[in-house]
Length: 310
Ligand SMILES: [Zn+2]
Image (cartoon, rainbow, N blue to C red):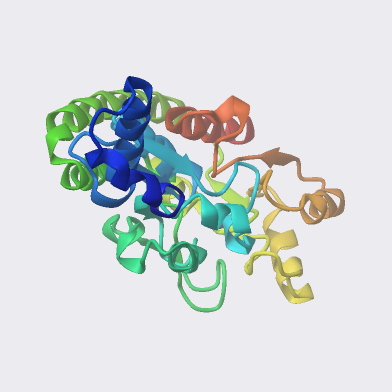
């Protein structure tokens, strides 16, 4: 804005300008103020790396802030390579919500490239009491699961953290954000209560997920992730790992097998052919038309469990 309109902005002191020109100048000044100096009522911009954070942020922000999703639904954050237009869209971001915990390390790079600065990246994951996947389930050593939002109780905490962050950014909006945050909390609590009722009917309690994405959901609702098909995102698992997973999918206490829409289904299908297991699909990321809100995201995970575990 400064570069495009800088020359004209000085004209504002001229006397007796035609009214229309003056109106244009007022608009230009307003744009300058909002992009450089932040007039008190200018709309601030916020971005979020992945859908669950985006949905929480935009639900809390309402129409007071512009909220932008960086990673489009259907893409895998672990293997994401930001594109030039992602960078361009972040130049004016005041705050970028990221998960951290190794899920979206590209957020820092993007913010730097956009000139937004690392200080504006706010990683929520470390504040969410991260869970370690036990040694031997994903990799030999314990590994942190970054997908905290699959636990609705942690999502409630993420709502509070978001309310606080947005209130710091835009203090005048504090009461507005708090009220919207409360509304979202109530809605998430209803979903959680529904999942608890459903979980009481699950007879099977062991699952194999495609990647290490459901430890929080499992811990919250009393099931156990006993294996992960692809321990390193995007990498072919070693043969001995596949053998171990195959064993988990067989026998009277066979674990239920889940694939994920963001990831290549070939491997899960091959495992199913080999063992006779049924492949269920679960989407831990959300944002697709049928999971267009945070609540819908987590409700659909629960539906997938209902089908697989009853
Ligand atoms: Zn993931």
